[in-house]
Length: 304
Length: 193
Image (cartoon, rainbow over all chains, first blue to last red; front, side, top):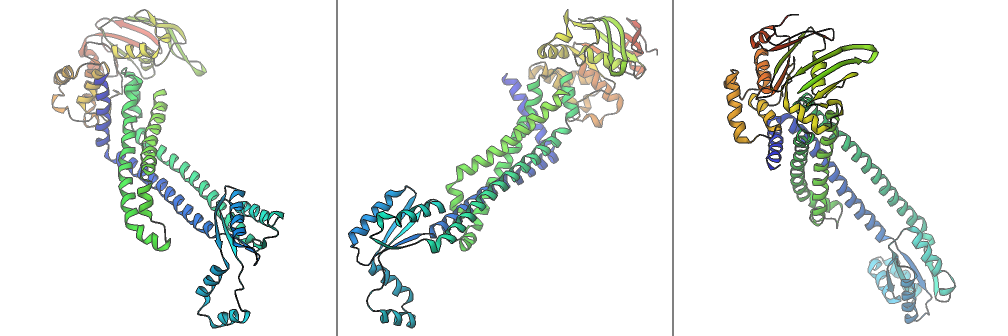
């Protein structure tokens, strides 16, 4: 058994180096395909980052009546947090904080500061700023509760209806991006499988006669199949090594440029923090495609 | 070892390739099958190897019906019979040495034995200096010799050929087929068609 195992490995190795043209073609196609799949993985990371950045900018503000004591507002904050687990963050902004923020923002504008002096005192209302983890429907649910009987004596107004259209639009765009991204990934994945399968088929096609002859001389099925399957695995493994280093170098080189376009997104950090998933995708896809394609093609020729 | 008992092979549309063929081949025998193109030589060899089965009649290997044999038995039959086709059926991606060694590897022979036996066989057939060449680099005659060398090594050999010279030189058993019928079966035969 061990001798036979050594023999089939030797056959695979000899053919791999002897048919350099075929090996290079198969590795090239597999490498391109794996890079494409890796690219999709990075795109997924980028789109997730963009979506969460945009979603974090969406909020809903409940303005309290000017005479509501601070403790009541803080109690209301606790109540809101209990409404749903989808409530990500509730921030209390007192009258003073609101005024401070406003003057910080518009202090340099004489018209606005003049208007503020004209009004006299602090015209701002205390508020709670709410950020949800879920989509547009989650915001609507919280807004409805805030506008309901429970808070009617406390809350002056809920700043949701003005933002409603924008919130819904952003979530609809996010959902569309995710949906199309998934469809695109599936299509590209299928195309990749077909291309790799056909390349392996072409690589083995030349051995069709050889496979028939091997059968005639009494070689067992596994003795015929194994070298081709091992060779398929070798194509996949070499492609993985190439892809891994290409991905590593590219992520390192373009990381700073990407960070300029998307502040807060470090491509190289994304690569290193997902390194095991990337290895799994690249190695798994490469070797699995090589092995499965070889297996199917050789089996087909063995039946002839 | 091999027994054909009233074997008839009919392909679709009533093309009769072999008709009521009966003969026996003993273990270790060297048999040449000769005949014109389309006489049924290849079909006959394919039936011996269990690659095709009779429409009527039966082919036996060591008393067992080949058509009922499982894949393990078929592999055993194919290993015991060295078949030499008209088109040689060499392994084009393997060298001359590897072509002969492959058969021995399939039989499960040890590497030490293969390393001694293959050069010896190749020396005998005059291909000792072409061990590292590929079949495409050999002449037609050399390819045929390689094909025979591969089939040898103490096995029962069935040779299908159009090469008169080789059959006459061998002086072994010759079965002549014409239109699917055995018209001659001689112990020390000659190529006569």
